Image (tube, rainbow, N blue to C red):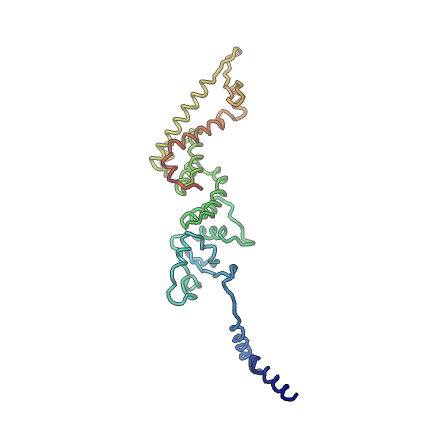
Length: 286
């Protein structure tokens, strides 16, 4: 029995980590040594690195994985081999950040709001916020973020001037925006060559827009005159409603806001697609 007791005591001493009950520092060091021997899987799908960016005079800390979108600029950047100590490489700290040159910090902040939404951080809601998201997502090849920006900006564009809408649609290659803006410009007949030129629209686009407008006017006149019918009473002018084949007075059409009808706008869209077929072919299909 004594031999068994001795052997058990010896086993405990051999298998238990030796902790010198001395200073607090020594206890901490011993516990750290024990913990370091425990295998830790740090490649779990929720485990992520934090990357430090510097944009203008501001530092941003963000998770790395959302930037690793297939085909994006950052996927290529982060796939490059890191020289030296990877843990102290570019993007590891404010002392060694990834510097994004010629990028607006306001644009980058709003891009992060969409890429990595955080609880308590107000989402993008204005045209000015979303335009930065669209700019960076297009430049860095984040198609999902780009589509979100286009969807959010579409109703917001209604409050922008037509020349601006045309420029934005051309700069970001958004087909639906371009067709809509040029068609509405043609129907309204409110823009001249000088105004379009002053806004920064190129001559080829201006020439195409004028062609569209002229064709819309021609179709409008043809439609009106082919549908005119003078009544026997008072010489009033009536216009045929093609939806129900009934003739209604111009006063009725004006009162209901239908003189510039949806049908005319639809025709204008069709003419835009014909006149700018080559340009639209080169645009993206978002």
